[in-house]
Length: 76
Image (cartoon, rainbow, N blue to C red):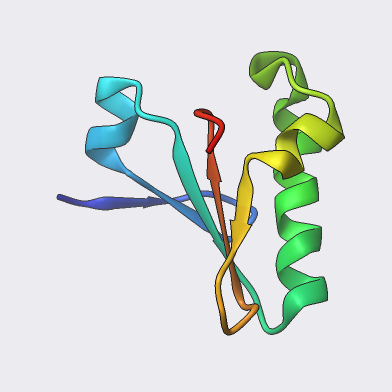
């Protein structure tokens, strides 16, 4: 499976794009940097996502090292 690199520094697997799966990983230097990347992604895709910023971040999970955020369209 090949990974597609998006402009905000997140990776979306090619199969996820084709199958409509909706998981996006954001990676950054620290918690603030990765949160900015996720917020930038939401801002540029908010009309397609149809989520408020609060709903978007409710579906995000921060990794234990605080350098990766995983967004999933499915709440949980």
